[in-house]
Structure formats: C-alpha cells, structure tokens
Image (tube, rainbow, N blue to C red):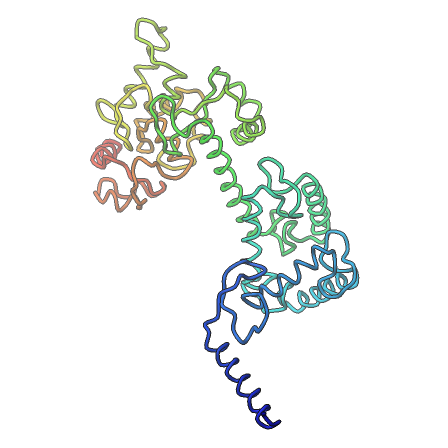
Length: 422
C-alpha cells in the first residue's frame, strides 16, 4: 500500500508527463473569429481565437456596433454614429484642439505638405473615396446610392451646395479667395493656386465626359474605324448640328447627351469623315460660278503652301476636300479669321492679296483640330522645338521669331517662301 509521500510523487510525475506530452504535440491551426483566416495559436495569445490584436479589437468593436453600444463605454450610441453623445462631443473637442495646433485631426500626428491630416489618414481617405465611387455609393454619407454621373446622393448634394455657398459668401465678405480663404489675385475673386486647380480639374472632367460619350457610341469612327481620341468628333445624324451649336456649347452638348441616356441621333465620326459627310465635293458641272471661282482660289492658295498637289503637312494626305489652311501660331486662327471678314474664303483671299505670308501651312481637318485643341496631333510624335533650330538657313533667320514652336514637314518650302517675301 502506497504511503502519502509516494502518492504525492506519483501525482507530480504523472502531471509532468502529461504536460510534456501536450507541449511536445504540434499546435493545430485554428480559424480567426473575425477575418476567418487560419493561424497557429502561440503562448502570446493563449486561449484567444484571433490571429492578431487588430482582429480582436475589430471583432469587439463590430459586436458593439451591431448591438448599438458606444465604442468607448457601455452606453447606448446615438443614431448613425458609433459613439454616445458624451464621447461624440469629447472627440470633436479633441480633434479641434489637434487642428488648432497644426496636427492631424484624426490621430494627432504631424502633418506634411499643408494637409489637415497625416499621410497615413490621407491615403486611407483617398482609398475609401475611391472604393465608394467604384461601388456607386455616396462618398459623403456612405449610405445612400449616388446620383447618375455624380459622386454624392441627392441629399448630400443639396447640403454641400448650401455649405459651399455660405462659405463663399463669408470669404467674399472678408476679401479673400472665395475657394480656399487665402489672399486672392488682384484681378480675380480667387487666388492663383485655385485658378490653376480649377483649370486642371475642368479639363480633366471635360475629357472624361467626352471619352464616356465616345465609348458609349462605339469608340471609333463609323466610316473609317479611326479610334484615336484627338481625331474623333460627335456627329449629328440628322444634320442639325449647326442649329444646336447656336443654343449650347460643345461641353453642354456632351453633358446633355449623358443626361438623356445617349440618344440615337448622334454618332462618332473622325473630323475628316465628318467634313466629307457635311460638305461633299460636287463635280465642276454641278456648281455655280461663284463656287467655281472660290474653288480655284482655294486650290491656288493650298498649292502655294502645300505643294502640287497640296498635301497635309502632318499626315501627308492629298485629298483636296478635307484640306484647309492652318495658322502656325497656335490660338490666333479664330481671331485672325474675324479680322479679315469671318467668311469661309476670307482667309484665302487675304493670303493671296498679301503675297502669301509665311504664317500658314496646309492641314487636313483632323490634324488641324487636334493640333489646335490638344497642342499636338497623334499622327506624329515630334517634340516641339524653336523654329530657329528647325530652320537655320540665313534666309529664314528672324522671320519666325513671333511664332510659337511648330515643326513643319517641308523646311525647304519655308526657305523658298521667305526668299520670295524679301
């Protein structure tokens, strides 16, 4: 019969052997209660069923949110909030103090690049806005569905307009920039930075809307299958484009197309096919005498600037019906056309009357539009250089100083024209 000492030793040895067997066994992976990923428990976490401390905290907070309990205490949370009234007020005061000290309004860390939040929370905010935009949810309230072609719901749009109007009136009364509250430009109601930002955002949004319309109608020309964005145009199938342009701008037309659900009266053509469809070239025996004289004059001017037969100085096409004169100095064509009369043939008459000044070249309608609208034509990818470096001939020296950088296909023709103008 065992005595008490032997019994105690037996219990100790048995316990140690049992623990040794438990420790020697390899731990089995278990599933996290929050993210449902498999993980191997360690001594650090003991009997917890979460793969990390973040999962543990998130699981705890999610259960509180489901039950409608404040995150910071056990009181009932307010409607559409994760905190009770007391902690909401406390958090507002804390964030207000952080912003007054120039710190991040979300965590109290130092900010950079003039932001109101730190870099981490700035990236988090951008990622959240992008996710809500992709899912079609309002980026402000994060609950309602966003309006078509907008980023916010109807309620948030009205509230945002009201808030912006009140802030704008406050800034105007103080004599500062109506957008940001900084010192404004002497000739404008906003500062230089806001003017630059508005211009960039406007161009970006305009291009995005136009690309959306082009892709909705096929993304390429219906006739020649041209797909380069800079060469495409929105054409009216019924031929009522001129009447519509008198009522609205091209940007307003694009917005109206999106609002009306892309009606079937529009289609996509390249500018050259649009010109062929709008003004087909009739035979000489089917036109009037005045039209015949205008055609002779136009061919004479085009042959002087583009050779015989005249060709586009950008893409090289020689189709007479789609060729036109292009002003070398970008942005001066419309103003010069009004000065010389405003009619279609006024520029050709003026060019011949003034002995063909070296301020034009020949372009097709597509290259002319792309170069004037976007600064370069996709037909060629040439870096713009000063004309003095393109034409080093002494005959041309000093004759292109008032023109912007614009590469011309045939430099020899330029030398001949400059020699003839002496």
